[in-house]
Image (cartoon, rainbow, N blue to C red; front, side, top):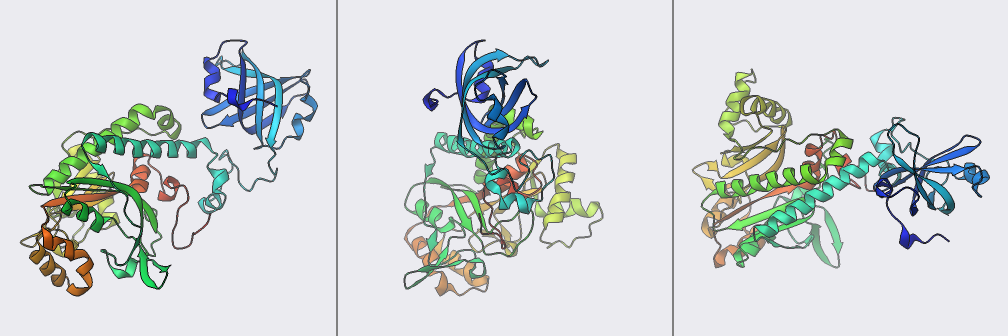
Length: 435
């Protein structure tokens, strides 16, 4: 039995000396028997290595019977291969099949044979064996780590909030009801109320990386019904620009960290991330409409920008400011939620756009209880039904603001992925609830 405690990763073979004994384990991605010599392409989390079996290898005759994608462990000696690259390989001494695969694979893992995204997602456990897909989630993991690293350095307290709630702050039409004993309950749309409650409690700066749920029957390439979000809130701000400043520094830190620590993954994905220069441009929505109209759009002043307008605006901003990262500010209050501060009809909310796509919505919140109640009624909502939200504000709330940033969409845009489902391990949309 091969001792897996001695196992090394495939990429470590290149750093071992000629003749070193090594143990590896992974998936047999390819097996070729040329008669007097056989080769196995072994894949693990860190890459590939070639295993060579000479004719005197005791299991030589049975290698051809091992199905592709079987899990194997091997013991052998390192030698320099005959390839022009000079890459090292492992000459087999022993091989153990830990788990044989069904030879009838439902999809081509290598990606050589085109497979629809739906079929790939149906067989996600196999699809994720493709090194390209693994690279996506290594980058996503680094994004999460970089966010936490930045937040800790900034003195932000991490929180975990309930995902089963009694009411929603975003509107009842997009709530998922759940069976919760004899009570009405829903899946959380956002961490909004809880973030604000923490500031009212005196935590001053808080964040969470967690799931949110929206019962929207959207079938776009950038929407989910379940998504992972970075939620942040800070108190004692002068205005929304304090939040913008924090967000742009966070974004630069994430881009810089991914560039420095994910070079191999970015090369594999063919992606270059240009770290944007601080500060990011602040474009009022009026200016954005003006820029679009200069290109023949003919939009009215109160137009609510959609996906196509965002995409076109991203191209214009890139040309004008030489950046993919910018803010859209000064939206009409009529286009923002009731909890965003209203400054004489102009909201203190903003969107952060990257490569022509909205990544963040945020702003300064209304912290004054009487004004908040007035804004709720001003939206045509029944104030009494928002008691769960407004009650904490009766007991002293500091001026504050924050934002929500989707990890899925952020990963998608950083890596130039065509569909947000590529950036999520097991995506959920109106049709998909498995695997």
